Amino acid sequence: MAKNIKPRKDDYAQWYIDVIKAAQLADYSPVKGCMVIRPEGYAVWEAIQRDLDRRFKDTGHVNAYFPLLIPQSFLAKEAEHVEGFAMECAVVTHSKLQKGPDGKLAPAGPIEEPLIIRPTSETIIGHMYAEWIQSYRDLPVLINQWCNVMRWEMRTRLFLRTAEFLWQEGHTAHETADEAQKETLSILDIYAAFAEDILAIPVIKGAKSDAEKFPGAVTTYAIEGLMQDGKALQCGTSHFLGQNFAKAFDIKFLGRNQAQEHVWTTSWGVSTRLIGAMIMAHSDDEGLILPPHVAHVVSAIVPIFKTPEEEQLVRAFIEKILAQLVGPGELEAAKTRLSRDRIAGYFFDPITHQQIVVDWRDTRPGDKQYYWEQRGVPFRFEVGPRDVQANAALMKRRLDRAKETVQLSQLSPTWLRDKLQEVHNAMFQKALTYRTENTRHANTYDELKQLLTTHGGFVRCHFIPNRANEAKIKDETKATVRVIPFDQSNTPGKCIYTGEETTTEVLFAQAY
RNA sequence: CGGGGUUUAGCGCAGUUUGGUUAGCGCGUCAGACUGGGGGUCUGAAGGUCGUGGGUUCAAAUCCCACAACCCCGACCA
Image 1 (cartoon, protein in one colour):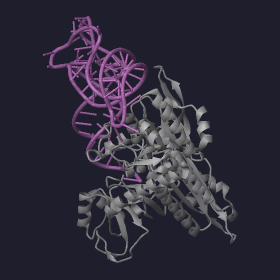
Image 2: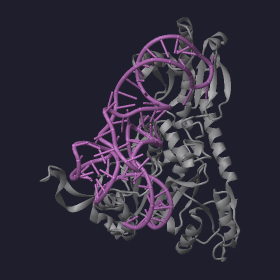
Image 3: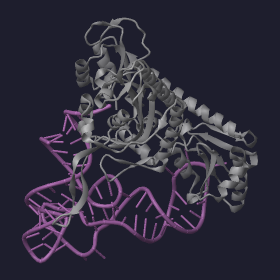
Image 4: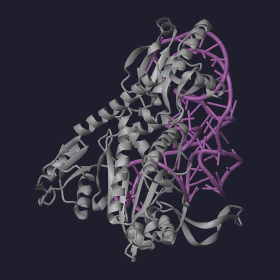
């Protein structure tokens, strides 16, 4: 039992915080609502960036960077957009600090037009696109940026909702509505594939109801995941913006027909919230469980010895293990590398910089087991005199604590990659099984209410999306329409709220 | 922004009722020794504007006043 982590069943919210603290993913900061992402957490973000960035580039996108500050007037140009974001904007109104009569620093030098710190960049990017796009030959524009944004939230939670967060935001402009639509959906596919193949989180693709869509979008698509406490979490969104922003920012081009037309735009993003999703989807009462593809340490080797003689033996044997897993070149290169407190790192994958570490610290083996376990490292190897004798190592799997003795001769990079993939598959399956078991069907509103209160999870039902009715349902159940899944059965039924005939099925759930 | 509560070491708390020496305790942290196949033992150490400002007093963590921050419940938000 982990003594610094509250079990999920006792207090899920506290468990979540404890896991993050124990794994040193993040820390609270002196600024309310803002978090510090520590190296262990940032490594996960880097893995997310690395993989997604490749996927974006593979589909023709390029990266750029736009300013943090946006003229306040820009936000107001799109009516729904300003409505959606005005309440949570941080506003910069002064350009300097000056000492007042009391000797204290106070803001001075008011600036002519207040600037807002970007809550999202549609407006400033729209402004630039208006200058850059003149002709159909300039299209499509396929730009992404990795940056931070700020939304002044009342209630924050590490990774899930913080005032400042890191994300990527793609902004594209197209000649036709059809092309923009396709882009929106192809990005959603990328997000879904990424969530499932890299983070091992099964997600449901679908459209948002009008009540839940992005302010300023025509249609918002999302991938939705189910967390272990039965609440849903939106893991990524892709918006078809129609010509709303094109009209607001006058993004026009001369079309093939010699007429001025407005472009069709999209925007899409995922954020550090994905790290929260990853934690809540997989981790257990012992701490973090990292999906292998984003684990910056894929294996930790824990040496066990009593005497200096035994240490010699063990050390020599571990070198043999490393030689087979990372190669003699890397084994040699690692010797000149600085390491903290005798945790030696060996790059297992030179591209992702995922590593295997050997924990030579002078602490008890039990401490080390917990240490690496709480950090979610997929595999631990125990190597002691007994193992040296047997020419083997004891391998422990983080996911289920399964133990396995592996012979030295078995070890190779492909062997470890296969093992990591097995863990990934098992994690995905486990999460998928959980989701399947926690997706239920309601035929009436009473059933919906009853299922939500007794089980949580997703509830699927016939429903005609409608802003007013959704608001009432949210009032009564705290649940919202998470998605209108693409995967529709197309069988007619009665809307659980109005009783009208419809084929539309939606997923309700309480959400983060 | 409304209602309630809290504020003393990194965390959790005692001390405030009835003002009085150097503000303690547990956990954690750090160092050393012994130890070593799942959180071991011992020794030692560091760490405090007692939320902030003002007042009463010979003397304030303690009494008085004002303010602030944080937490919970609403509201807002994905």
